[in-house]
Length: 217
Image (cartoon, rainbow, N blue to C red; front, side, top):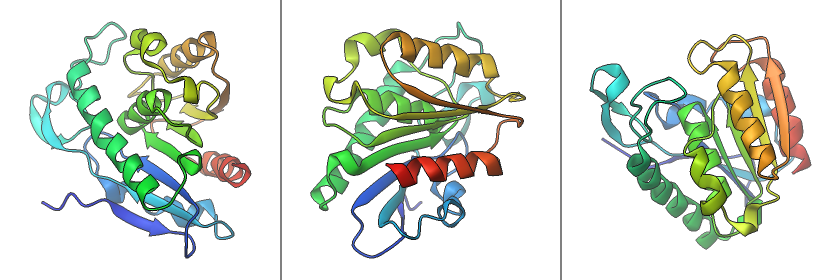
């Protein structure tokens, strides 16, 4: 199985990068089409779409699939796979390091993700030791929320955060996202919050808002 990340560049000699993390059971190909839809042709951005490791997922009966960490339950009080989250943190931090070594400044690198990938984007973006450009967290929640205050990086205390969620999300309820937003705001983070009439998905209005946000970054 090829685990090489998919690379898409909007122009030659990219000066910015977005590392985009897919959701549970998908792979790096899942969000490749969004690059054209975002219409960022006047910017030179390298999109990096990695593949999560294949592992057993408890809520899916132990079936093996691509996942950034195991999910033990979908209730607010369910135990979380801290070991798995932190292992993926190291994996994705290495991808950030590789982009820096390739010549893209850390402050020009954003971390994006949908669902479980968005959870990892929040987790890593708040902890990475060098200042990053931003976090894009779509239809997701803040994992290991009780650890953020002690784990977070001073370099990213003021990181721009784009959060979006659907009112009708039946996988990760809207209230989960609201709680995560409020927790981040309590910790002093500024959230660019967006809500849409949709389920656990991405909609056109959301893509338009995200495009404007990336254009301004």
